[in-house]
Image 1: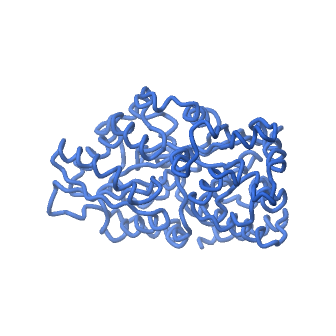
Image 2: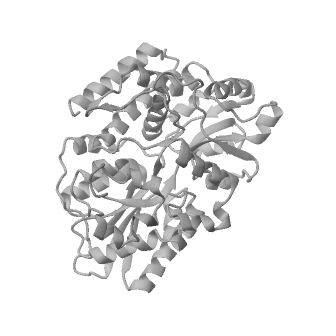
Image 3: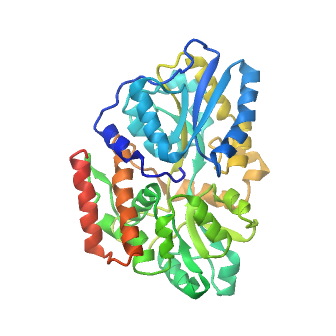
Length: 437
């Protein structure tokens, strides 16, 4: 999913405390079963762009079914809080799309229509979707609360000219990445090896998970959080140290709360590498960077991996779509889900917004056969791991993600961020998780 702000923290804590479980939700137009309300997350470079892309497609749906769709695109800083409020108040939409890592947490509220065999058959059945995308739709052993809508994966984007000028090839290991980043960091030219979204708690949580996995970490052991294990400390250090120890990230990146600044820095040659999800090429084009001026490879793993370490270059990222259980137009809501996940709509929406299709038929289109997209497909198939699908996942993102964000801010201000500093900060997050706050 794309970057989001910190406003979700309080709501996530409420979620994990089991406050929701109200099973209320949607149907803002209960007197009009021919009208649906759809809350969509912000996938484009602006909310207006999402509206411009989705508007004509929803008109097609209206012409096909006679059902009018009221669209509201909600920015990431507000989305989780809005959804949680809807689960308890009943003043929500009929259909909503969500970051897929929230799936199990939102499923635990009981507010969403389970996609049991009969229900998922109404949107094309499980076979409609790429299997890996179904791993992030809810808790294991339960009918999914959502189905996939957009696919995403992390990759390492590199500036081909800067690499060629320095006589470098794309890094194959994490150690290569650090070495190359040092060579490409020339502060006098305002050029750095890597650009990061330092103020984004979601980015912080994702990289803590991925690099923790490379070091052998498991976030939860039998339901108990393990945020401050030696493996997690090593994983967080791997990310934060790009700024704190290796000095290959501009300290100003500690204030980057969304991807717009990061995309601009990379497109303008102010950074040689960036780790970002697969939607990035659209943003690079808007910043004047042409196809062929950048390449994409999997985020390298440390070599050799430590005992228990796993080859993880991304989590199974993406956006899911679900139906509030108390919608007054369940059949219409499912028709909308089926429409938006159809191969034809996947081609249109993913081409304009930038993510990856979640249905295999869409990849027959030449637009989805570029080298970059083939790289991302390979990442999802071979080196992506699903974040834990448990109710506590949203709390992990807010607690650990904000911890990483603060560590980056400390590094940018010149404070020492060493193993013990990271250990202490993660222990504090672990205690908050254990006490529900």
